[in-house]
Every structure is written in structure tokens, then in C-alpha cells.
Image (cartoon, one colour):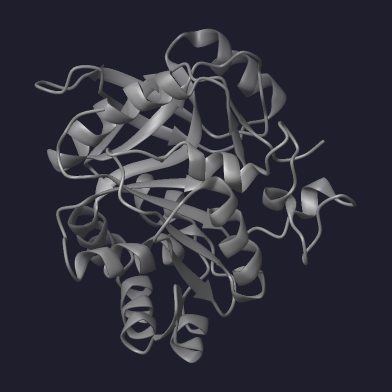
Length: 280
């Protein structure tokens, strides 16, 4: 990892785990279960971002899970996490915007690394190498994502069509387009093409870039979240978003709000042993 200012990990822990029913359910969703090791998925996620290259994480979660999340951070050896409590679930775009607004209050040029609480990654060294490339791209104003080389014609993932290398950003490529979760025939074509990667759903950008892109492509989301952050209350490590303002926010993923619309997208092809632990 490079020695520039620390990367701020942002862990989105909003899901209620319906696809893994009955083990995972609303009161105790899948990110709190040890499904791939003896540690829970969210603890594994937090541990990938420990060390001098990283600032303490921001975790955005359902307010009902606040003590669970705090305990998982303690188990992971994480100190100083900021836990942002959503009064209602509004998908990933509002959640990451809340984190970016908090970070931007002190350091708008900080690099944010957005990740779901419930992915499995086997090769953390390879992940950190890819993150280094993505952080370089982010500091150059890019909205970076990670593309995983397909190992099967998977219909449960979105795909990224990869363009040429980006000048001055070794390891990062242009994004031709993002492709929705395909049907089986399309998935087979994409997986075999050599030009298409799985969209991991992890994104890297500066707080300033994310907020500028939200202003451009989803201003109604930014306005609602800005009001929710302005009206927040704080209790220890917990930041409670203003309920009415946040409830007024559109329910939209970051993929729809920005990734598929931005002209600044970059993709870092990576082999990190990644899997979205989405369903059985």
C-alpha cells in the first residue's frame, strides 16, 4: 500500500439477508454470521482494512444493528470506528453519500473505499495491491471499481466491459459500460469474451469526487442526505441520521445513481478470490 494519506474504509452493512434465509434474517443478517471462516463476514471485512494505510472505518448500518456492529468492530481489533445509523434502508447511494459528507467535513480529498459487509475475499495481499492502483486513480479524479475475472457464466453478478489502459494510471482501465445481471445465454457470452469482468460492487473515490458526481447525477439524493447529516445527533461512536430527511431520500444503488452515468469511471482488473456471499 502506498504511503499517501490513509484510505477511509466505508463498510455498508444495510442488508437484511433475505437471500440466505433461514440462517440469515432481519434481526441477525448474514454479515454477522461466520459463513466462510470462524469470524463473521463483517469482522473479516473490517480486518482487511487494518494497518497504517487505513483510517478508522465508517460503518453504515441499520440502527437496530448498532450494538452488533460495535461488538464486531471490537472483535476485529478496530478502534475509532464511526457507526452511521440509518433510520430506514435507502440502498447504497444514500449510505455512501452520508459517509462522504462526514469525511468531507474535515478532509474532502480523502480516498474512500466502499465495500459491502458480506463479501468473501481469499487473497488480501492481492486486494491491497489492486486497492493501491484504485487509490491512485481516485486521487486523479476517477471513480474506480474492481473487476473480477469471471470463473463461470454467473447470472447473479453485474458485468463491466473493459476498455483500454488509462494513461498515467498503470493497472487501471477505461470502462466501456456496466452491464446489468444477465440471463444465462448472455452470461456465457460475457464470461467467455475476455473483455468482461464481474462487477465486485467495491468502489474507490475521493469524498469530493463522489459528492460532485452525486450533485451531477443524483442531486435529489445528495440534498436529502445533506439534510440528514446536518440534522444528525451523536452518541459515543454512533451517528444518527435525521430520520425524516433520510426517509425522504430516493432508494437507489450507487451503480444506478453514479457508476453507470459517470464519465470518470475506471476499472482495476483483479484476482483476489472474491465472492459475493449472496445466496446458498
